Image 1 (tube, rainbow, N blue to C red):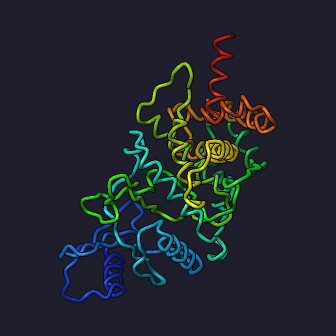
Image 2: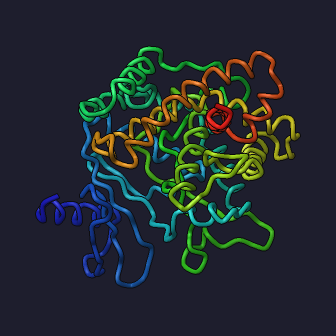
Image 3: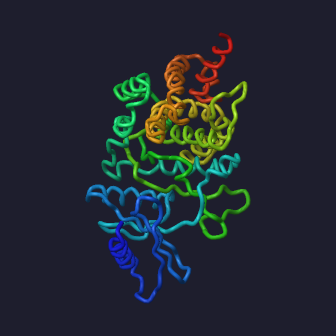
Length: 370
């Protein structure tokens, strides 16, 4: 935003918050989009995030409705004020929960599960239609990726094209298959762990799970199934493990959140959805398998994102990884069908390693045998 626009946003935000004229405040940009600011009173009072909504009226109404619903559900920080130009929320000081999760902190992982359940428990019909082309299918992501495909192998283009045409529809049962209010970009960068020393919300008593907050609502929709959010979280979690230095072994050649940690997430998620009682091990594992069933679409979406990140360069490490990954994803889909048809041994392996992990391990075994 230009400096004049920033000044207008500052004046408007102060008016919405009914701040006295003499109260000094710092107003500084946050993020890279140029539409979000931190409003920090000099008297160390409550800090606010001011987001200028560069959308049409329908988009503004939807964004405010979604943000307000998430705030009331205890999922996102409190919405303080809004109008047809901006939304103001309370600023919760904290950091991404990534570091804590990668260290294997089960309390934080369980807190993420409960957070996802609270999100998915919001009444999706109360918000009207908040489904867009970017919310429900691969076509939206393919449109963004296609301009970068010129130098990529034809094999990858054909794979993406077929995936978009087929829609990668999945038959998911149980809680994972429920159509709910979903985030659409559920990754650890969007899950905030408040700093206990500075945020009341972050303070916990001994034995309690830490409070976590969900931020960003651009891709929230009420047209997707619950498992799509969780499958996407697990897939991005795996990517973060790889970036953090995860190393393959004889029994696992593809990074994926350890079963015990995914079980902790699922156990907390299912308990929060229900009456609070601990779900059985069988219910937890069935839920994790259903998440795998709807995980293929999320993995393809991330592959498309990776092509964009690599700027369409097949020699780029990220681009090369996507090309290498195609065969695993194709095989994974066949494995899921076989397991769903009654192969319980394969089903158990998929629950442990993730479907793509099993496919990758089988490929390595075949290469060694050959």
